[in-house]
Length: 139
Length: 139
DNA sequence: TATGCTAGTATCCGATGGCGACTAGATAGC
DNA sequence: GCTATCTAGTCGCCATCGGATACTAGCATA
Image 1 (cartoon, rainbow over the protein chains, first blue to last red):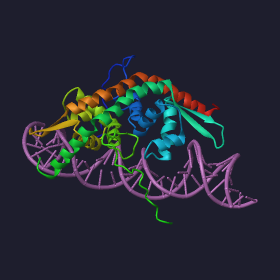
Image 2 (spheres, each protein chain N blue to C red):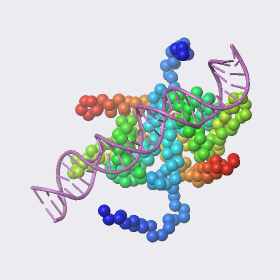
Image 3 (cartoon, rainbow over the protein chains, first blue to last red):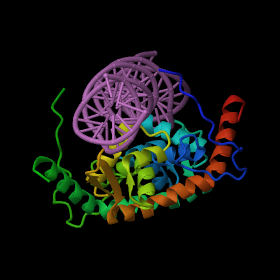
């Protein structure tokens, strides 16, 4: 095996106003898509868009989420500026999570997904049944 | 440990027109959301919405996708009725993937996500920098 | 004969996610 | 006083998931 030759395909530097492109593995928008394309993040965002909520309230509202994933997801949503966290010094201490204005713009983009899932579920399930039948018998 | 008593909480059968609810762990829409909230599925859907493409073309267009994930994701998208697969008996055999009408409705719901990622990337990165600085020093 | 093309599958291994136990500080009950 | 409980998490263990690499099959080319 000879050493693979790295061939420079871009003779000129990239244009200054280079548009973000999710299809490039290294593009920052890919990381954003990664974050957005996350079940728990989507559900949290939808719930918080409806109003500020405490940790355990979210936990109870989101069926099947683990504490680890909830706290992890909230932390990265906060880091991304989509959710804000407010500690209230009661006893025991309570923590309130709210959606930020930026988060609200994302919610607007994400909510159609929930709508889609809820409206097209029947079509998807029908297709799955058809597909699985075709696997056993001859298609 | 006494046997846990299962208490029937629904004395009457659930209403017929029970609305799907993504927040219930067992709701079929949750599985759909799970599928949709997938980086690769989103990218494939966006590419196929622009026109039919072969396996290796998709592979080349989607930076960083492995063959395993590409074939796996295409298979489940096909099962869900979102993309269709056509084998063309050339030599070597080629396989064409196209978006279905159902897939096109999902694409309409998913594309805003890409738009959002591409327009708000700067705000997200700024927030991340702010957050990470706040972790080192005192917030 | 060896290599490349096509569209995958098989296998190994590190990363990710889920589960349950555990933390802290104050309060309620025995 | 001692234990249980509430809050919002963290920690460790383990199963599954995702990625990298190697391999398949049939034909064309060097």
